[in-house]
Image 1 (cartoon, rainbow, N blue to C red):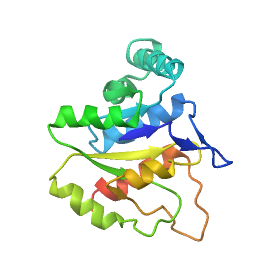
Image 2 (image 1 turned 180 degrees about the vertical axis):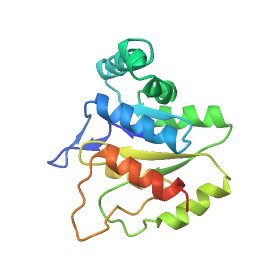
Image 3 (image 1 turned 90 degrees about the horizontal axis):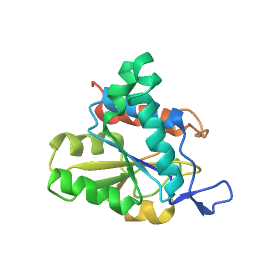
Length: 181
C-alpha cells in the first residue's frame, strides 16, 4: 500500500502536498498488517515530513510507544518513507523482482473503474505484485489516477455521501479485497 501525500488535491482542487498524521500512519499500518499487506509506503516529497515520519516510527518502535503498545510496534515494522510515487513503485519492483500493478483509489466515479470482485480475483491470482494507492487530502491527482494500472470503484454503499477518512477507507477497501469471503 502507498499512502500518497503528493500529488493530491486540496478542497479547491489544487495539487498540493499534505501533512502526514500519526493516526493515519499507525491505523493504516495496523489494518495492513491484519490483512497481510507486506509494506506501507508513505509518499511525500517534503523532507521535513519524512523526518517527522521517522520520529513517529521511532516513538512507536523504540520509544515509549513501543513499550506501551507492542502490537503497534509490530505493525509499523514495514512502514517506509518514499520521496515520490515513482520511487515507491521502483522500491516494490526491486523488492518483488517485477513491475507492480498500481491500483488507484478514489471517491469520485470513473467510467473505467473496476469492481472489487474483479480486482480481488486479479490479486488472488498473484500474477504480479500490486500497490494500492490511497490519496490524502481531497484525493489522488488526475495524473496519478490516469497513470494507474487500475482504478477501483469508489466506496458508495448508501446514497451519494462518500467522505471517509483515508484510514477508514483503507480498512473498508482491504476488507473488500482481502477479507474472508
